[in-house]
Image 1 (cartoon, rainbow, N blue to C red):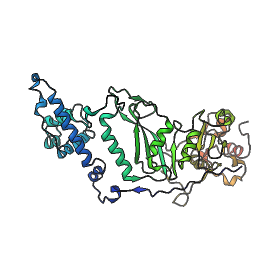
Image 2 (image 1 turned 90 degrees about the horizontal axis):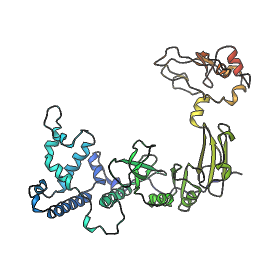
Image 3 (image 1 turned 45 degrees about the vertical axis):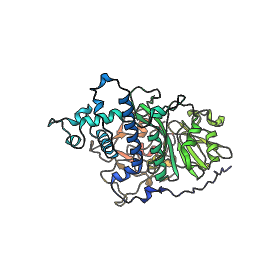
Length: 424
């Protein structure tokens, strides 16, 4: 039976919106100020000055010579300079903070001394604050309370400035942190393995971060997290691509209720039927597919080198060719009269499979041509497919142009294109 996906039209106009659309500038600082606005900086200045006053008032008389008594209230303009230098330390790396103000000719970075003294930078860094400690409720469980105003401001600006295109992606991102933190996580599959994990929703086409939610050890379900990340995108026909950490048949049906499609890989025991759940590599030939669907959701298992299981709510129940396989089994046309240039690589055929139509056409179609030279080898060779199947280690300098299969001229070539079991 031909399965039809639920038709949910896309009803949004993607692209910059609000102040993002109105901005006519090519200067990076103007785009930065869309997100790190004067409103945010004024709040940081107020909280920094407040914390400095609270700290100094709480000191006893024995600390009258402490450096903090040199404190002067910071301004928005000065905070911008401080933030600029802080960002610059991420580009210019030095082992210690003090070395940015070093006057040694070999190590000096003159710009830092020019715009702000070292002691002033360090004292602003000492009192930098984003939220009032004295107003925190005794029963507050928000582990991000101290940075909550900044985080909420930035995320709200992410959502205000841009409307994503129809394809969106939800995945985890890591912010590097190796210090002491109750909700620091370790993920060996990420480039940054230690740090603060965040769930992030991005535009698949541009990579723009539309929404994010740091993980602080709370017990919220993945389904609730996904729905909260969608925010205003729910109900407008978006297509969400997610990996098997999130996907389940139940989540697909839940997102369909808010007019959002889903596609991605799926783990075992996530609501799939038994025929999909229990399928093994030995049950499928390479390229073979098993599909099952209910009214709204289709689940399938497809065999490549391993069995891949996925779920979708908007594809049809048919499988096309994978692009890499198509390139291996077909001729490719080139701009220079259909011939490969000397800088092009010789195509490689899949090692474990043979093209189905290698026996169905005449020998004239299967042209045997030399393997092209590479920067490292002027006369490259490859293992002859027929000889390898017979357990012989013999190489050839020719390959079948139609399929990219290396073959010896003569008997190996004729046997490969005339016998189904050419290894006998």
